Image 1 (cartoon, rainbow, N blue to C red):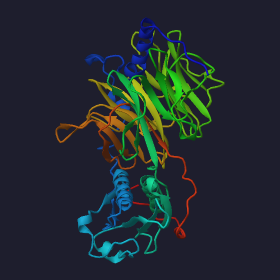
Image 2 (tube, one colour):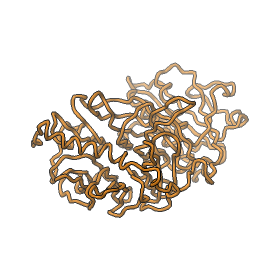
Image 3 (tube, one colour):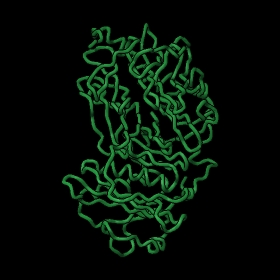
Amino acid sequence: MFTYPRLSKRSAGVDGIALATVLGVALVATPVLADDKPDESALGEFVVTGSNTAPPLTKLAILPSLSPAFEDVIVRGVVRRDMELSGMFRVISDKKAPPGTYDFDDPVDIDAWKKIGAEVIVKVAARDAKKKNQVEVFGLAYFLNVGKDPVYEKKLIVDKKDARVTGHRITDALLGAITGRPGGFASQMTYAAKWGRNRVAMSMDSDGHNPSRVTDPKHTAIAPTWGPNHDLYYLLSKNYEPFALFNHTQKKYINLSEKGSIYSVAFNSDRTKIALAIAKSGKIGIYSGNADGSGLKKVSTTTLATHPVFSPSGKLAWVGGNTNKKRNARRVYVDGKAVSPGGFTASAPTFCDTENGIKLIYSVNVGGDRRDIVMSQEKGGGTVRLTKNQGSNTYPACSKDGRLVAFFSTRRHKGKKSDGIYMMNLSNWRTIRVSGSFGESLRWDPLPPPAASASAASDKKPAKKPAKSTAE
């Protein structure tokens, strides 16, 4: 097992400057003077209030439950929360539920729900299974534009400890049955956050549940991300050592073919390639190679390059700039070509595999310690603005299904400061606060597929692809 050479506190000061460069300068950058402010029209139309009028939300009913079973409460609550966060539906209040019985095996009164305006009807329930510490989970959905036959019906036997993630998987399957495109809620977020004098790596479920510190606050951990086998990786510094790539799941450092202090890491979609920002001789460059850290080659040409990220199609983006220029705005590069608008310091690119193609999303500095989120085509061009005059918005990350982008925001709500993680639907721009957590380097990755589980009933699928939801 190899070890990185330790730095003295004096030497660590240089390392600290590099860290400030990556975490701070990449966002704050060169001040924008009043008489030299770039033209914000280059950031494109502000789509939330622009000519892109969102269609009305589809009315969705989730059947109430009278069951006292803890797992029933969990599964139903998870599905309801996911549907609300999707931004696609107006979830009908339980108070409007028609009279009736709502036990596990009770049939759904489609006509009664239709009378109160439901266009989609969902039933989710859970009860104890015959085997100890297991539950039977039932999911059922009707899309009334298709007909009175269910578009989704499934019963599963799962361990009680998996009730919450099973709820997310049911949501994803329901979205697939309703819209033809499965959801992305069976997933996790990770990010770095301040903790005392250091930064730590955090993890959280996609719906904001259970934000947890995963690293020792005595050390500094930055730029966490998910790697092969859904192992958690981050960059770790102990006792003023250079930052090294660490596999948290396997509790080991990763030996790299290029040495230096590391400030960003990313894996491609099939986890066969890695990209890192490595500091050498006063410069920070992007190196790419095999996922195990071998075969690394420098791919950036600017003196500063940070925050690499792979596109689903295999393209590699990063933030680059030349520190030897008097006035320099860091820009987003895709496969070596600058694609973000000139004059604006850009940061934290990510890619969204949306139903309208792959999109590049990143943050730009608009002055006054404010940053906004913009979106363009995968290789740049067609830029539109996703946030404006709503605090500072940073570090976007996209769901697996490409419907949602999450980001940190310092916006206010009803006159009160409401820092946290927000989700925006990329079809209708509806935005919801997910969590009060705040940090940097947000990443959002799907969970591995579930292990094979026993099925308590046959699965029913629609004979034809459902009509497209009006919310998409």
